[in-house]
Each structure stands twice: as C-alpha cells, then as structure tokens.
Image (cartoon, rainbow, N blue to C red; front, side, top):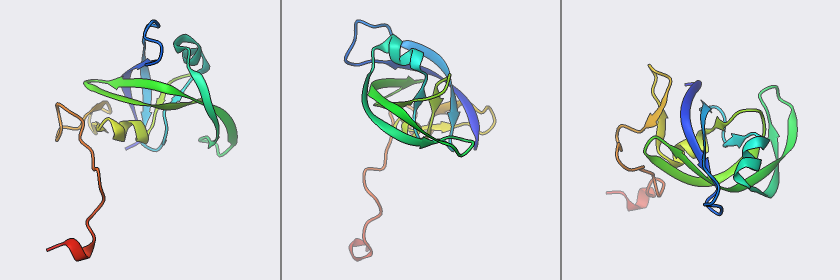
Length: 135
C-alpha cells in the first residue's frame, strides 16, 4: 500500500501533567515500528528503556534509543507502546497500526479505523486451530 498520513496524538501515560503532542505522521505499511524524533521525547519526558539496532530505508544500520511507555491515539483508537528515536518526523509503522486495528484507505491514502470494526479495535487473539481440532 505504501505511504499515507494520519493525525496522531502522543502522550506519556506516566506524566499526565505534560500536554499530549498532536502531529501529522507519515504512515508506512512497509515500516514496522513507531519512530519519533528526539524533540518529542523531550516534550513528553520519555525515558530510554533499551537500545535497538535498526535498518533504515537506504540499508544502513543505526543503534537508536527505544523509549516508552507511549500512549498513541489515531481517530477513535488508542494504544500503548514504545518508539524508536529516529528521524525528524513521526513514522507510524505496521505494529501500532495493527494494534489499533487501523487500515490505509486505498483511495484517500489516509489511515482510518478498520470498517469491519468501526467502533472498537478488533484483533486476532489466536492463530488457526490445529487440523485435529477442526470438524
């Protein structure tokens, strides 16, 4: 599907005294994680939890901070997660989009709630049943 855009609200659930940050994020279905710039880490008072080695679009590898927890909201969906500190804009990857049951609308290239579950995020809680259990 490629690139799309979403209005995203980010907050630190450990610091309700800090105002959330609302941004236009680049949503990329080929990216995996949520990535945020350093200035958002500072604004939200996020703490480094770990470090991760990431491969970026040009194929180079970088060691980056992994911060959290982070509250993520898009449309009528909310989620919790961590983020890689990378780049100069927010990048919404496949994991947070799947977690909040969001899809990229093919005509508008906007991130929207899954129309099959318009009011509450849906999820697959288990894989396919073993063949021996099917009837």
